Structure formats: C-alpha cells, structure tokens
Length: 243
Ligand SMILES: NC(=O)c1ccc[n+]([C@@H]2O[C@H](COP(=O)([O-])OP(=O)(O)OC[C@H]3O[C@@H](n4cnc5c(N)ncnc54)[C@H](OP(=O)(O)O)[C@@H]3O)[C@@H](O)[C@H]2O)c1
Image (cartoon, rainbow, N blue to C red; front, side, top):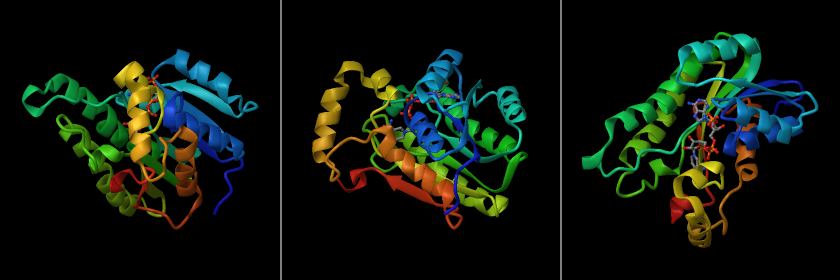
C-alpha cells in the first residue's frame, strides 16, 4: 500500500456528502486535496470545515462543461489521484412519464461528465496514479418504479472502468459502489422523511445502520493506495445487496 502523504488528490464532488468524506480522510492521511463542485459558496464552506492546514483548495467547475473541466485540470497541474463523487438526484419517473430533458441533464452530468474528467485527467496524472468513479446500489436494487435510468447509468461505470483500466494501464481505474449513505443529497430527495427511511432501511441492513460518508471514504483510500487494484468495482453497502 502506498502512502498518501503529499500526494495531490482531486475530489470532484468534494464539497458535500461522500466526496467531502473522502477529502477529509485524504487530508487526515497527509494528502494535498483539491475539491471541486459547481457552487463556490459550498466549496468555501467545505474548505472551512475541512481545515486542512493549508492543504485543501477549492475550484468551482461543472463536470459536464468541458471548458470548466479543462480549466480545473489546468489550474491543478500534475496530480496523483482523481476521485469523482459528483452527482445530482436521479430521475425517478415511471418510464411512460419520463421527462427527457431531466434524463439528458442527469446522463450528461454523471456519465458524460465522467468521460470528460477522464479525458482531461489523463494529461496530467502522475505515474502510479489512479482514477476512481462512483456508482451505487441503484444498479443492484433499482427503485420501482422509476429506477431504470439511474440503474443503467450506475451499472455502466463498472464497464467504463474495466475498459479504461486496460487502455490507461499502468494508471489504475476503479469504481466505488455505495449503498445508502446519509448525505445532503437525501435531504434534497426526501427532506424530513429522511429519518423514517433511514430507520427502516437501517433495521433491514446486515450492518444494522445507514452509512455516514466516513464509513465509505476508506474504500476510496484503499483503491488509491493498493497498486494491485484496477478495473474493479468495490461494493460497500452494509449488505444492502443481500436484503
Ligand atoms: N448518498 C447515497 O445514498 C448514495 C448512494 C449510492 C450512490 N451515491 C452516488 O454518489 C454520488 C455522490 O452522492 P452524495 O450523496 O455524496 O451527494 P451530495 O451530498 O449531494 O454531493 C454531491 C457533490 O457533487 C457536486 N456536484 C453535483 N453535480 C456536479 C457537477 N455537475 N459538477 C461538479 N460537481 C457537482 C456537489 O456540489 P455542487 O452542488 O456545488 O455542484 C457536491 O459537492 C452521487 O452520484 C450519488 O448518486 C450516493
């Protein structure tokens, strides 16, 4: 396992939720961290909370905007690991009521955005580095109705990583697929109903609770540090795929 001390890590989605947890864990391990997201305000608030002794910076960028993505990597220069956790609430329409503009926006941001990040990251990723993208439990346990698009997009990441791992070798490319995680995204999706959802699901899960971002972050750190892991999807879901 390699040491993350002084390694430069970009976390796209690092101003909130799972990405914030990865940024915090990477800082604890001595890394230099760049967090990116669309909102400058959220980035500044996250930087304050992370308090990385000067080792964290924030850069505003929309991952589906190629000029933004090029500017992000241009500003960072050479770096060691890319982590992409960015995402927005998925479409949840029954298929017959699909809002195509919403679906296009979701796919554009999550999947096309990942392609764009990989395209630009590869130019300045140091030897021995890696890319990690984020999938999720919705591909294994699709919400019914309305889960088809998110399931297809999340599922595609496994194959994206397998192909890229071959193309970019020895640069490593991997995926983390979390189960439900208690993040700001849930406040946006279900609001005050969140605690009820989490109580019910927590009781069903073999792990007996819903994950916090700090429970998920070690999977990303492991993939950065283990030089033998590539083309792989790590499921970290408290046993959610079993129930
Ligand atoms: N939470 C869960 O239960 C769970 C489970 C499985 C998978 N996932 C997946 O994990 C990912 C992260 O989820 P989360 O719960 O951590 O969400 P979150 O708390 O809402 O955080 C999302 C982060 O992504 C950034 N972001 C969103 N769209 C972006 C874009 N187009 N360009 C750049 N940054 C963008 C947000 O900042 P701005 O808003 O400022 O851009 C924020 O920093 C999502 O793709 C989600 O589907 C989540």
